[in-house]
Length: 310
Image 1 (cartoon, rainbow, N blue to C red):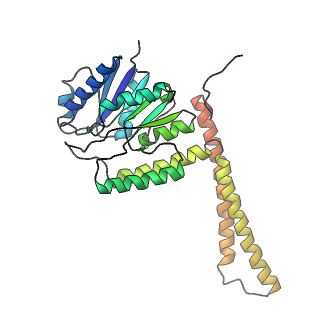
Image 2: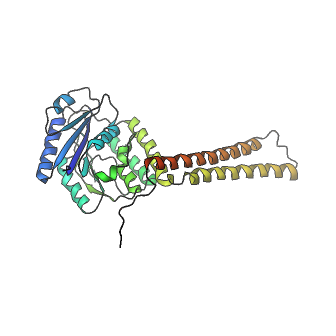
Image 3: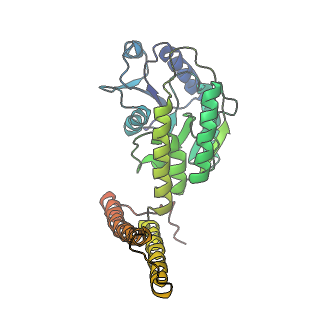
């Protein structure tokens, strides 16, 4: 029999939190009265996190050879989880396992993914400002239906994660990715506490990586089934602009007898046309690559909820 719940938690230098976190997760899951498993992924800690984690039970402990990042840790946890529902959270005790029932109640309402919303965040002013800016960009690009993609406390039906492999900082965009595939995404307000032990792992480098991943997901969400529309449309626009420039130069030469040999515009026109042709060719190549990707995965760019035979 499968576990009802798999709680997946990445850890990196959390020796001051790991024991208390495990205790809180066990208490919350026992109170629910369902079968559960706890999966900790040690992301290359160089303190006593592993030593303390090995004394805990019940626990599945995955040890990375070095620090690969939170997204890789979540992916590794997803691949060994046996639960019907996967609950994710941070290992710093800023998320509260007591909120797990709130997520599951929302799942029972018919949602496939439920994200936590840290409405009252207990972080530094700098982190809050950066997070709000990132959320604004996410809303503009991804147009997802949640407020707080950075909250790691989430509940996700395992079936929704079958076709997802995570890279970079993409764990924070799981709801947006699944919503694009047609899964129902909801959110609930959850508690958030200040970090008491250890140091935050968030820095500007992770922010930049997250932005790049956001752009990738925007492109995939908008053009994964039709990349030629993006690159082809851009290419044709460049060709049109370049052609207009050359026509304008030709009119000046013929009608006004202007000297264009020492002007940059003829070269600009030719350059823009060549750039447009390159975009067209690139669009064709990307279109072929993406179609081969779907073929290799044995899937298509759509998702079927169920088939009703009436």
